[in-house]
Amino acid sequence: MICPACKKQIDLSTGRPLFCPWCGERLPAEELLEERLREARAEDDPVTKYALLMKLREEYPGRLEVEREILYLGRMYERGGRPDFYRIPFWPLSALEKPREFSRGMRREMLTRFFENPELERVAGMAPDREAFIGEYLDEMAAGYVDLFIKHSNANSMFLGFRLSKADNERRCEKALIPMLINVNKSENVPPQWKDRLCRALVKGFERAFDSDAARRLEAKIPR
Image 1 (cartoon, rainbow, N blue to C red):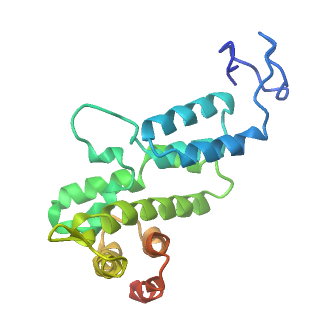
Image 2: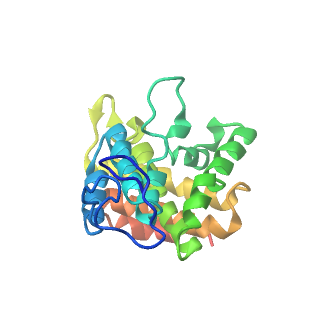
């Protein structure tokens, strides 16, 4: 690990010391990790969140809890340069919601990047159960997509410049999600073993976004 005070490297092969062997400063306690992770998760600004997570990675190296949060953040902390939707880790799911807006080659590239993400493979390899970890990753990405690109899209939340009621917003989003579930099942770019899991993740994302019984109706729409 790296000492937060003197920035020198500490060998952990024989155990985690209480104090830095170089400068003598007390090292961060293990029990503080979850508290600081909660602080990072609660941060809305991606730049600040990334800085908090990088500090945790330095102080608690090789921890799945930290690496998972960095993975979920994607590249949303990047600023400047040309517009790049790939900074949003769940944006490639747009290829399944609105396939006509992208060429066949673009859809393939988007979903290949999503499912064959080297960082996803690296962090999943740290988990005791790789498939369970990827399932949790799909839950988080689907929830993020439903909230940002479906629930809060102007097409589903506004009409003639006026914000729709929660009930109208929910109905529009339900209609938008049904063809997406069908497209997941039809897509040649979604790995077969993850099609049903991704559909269920999208339904869970809808339920999280609206806290609604509509999720039961959507569950029935998942292609079998």
